[in-house]
Length: 62
Image (cartoon, rainbow, N blue to C red; front, side):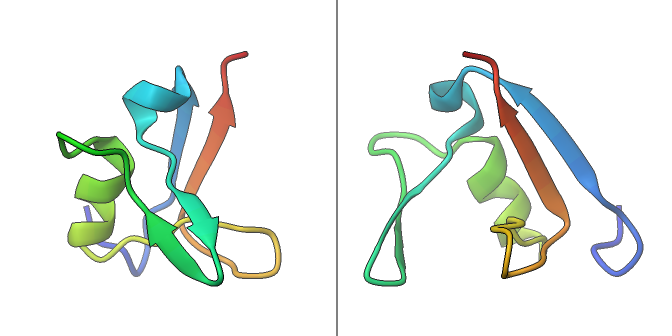
């Protein structure tokens, strides 16, 4: 997958996806393990945060 022409859509348990908390502009990743979103960001993808457009889109299952 190439971040320049690929969008990733994820849905599931927030703990499984690894949705980071954001405080003062800094991402705080879940502790203890790498999860899907963090792995994809390490490959050059970025989370879509509304005003900050990215190519990782997610939906919380609950």
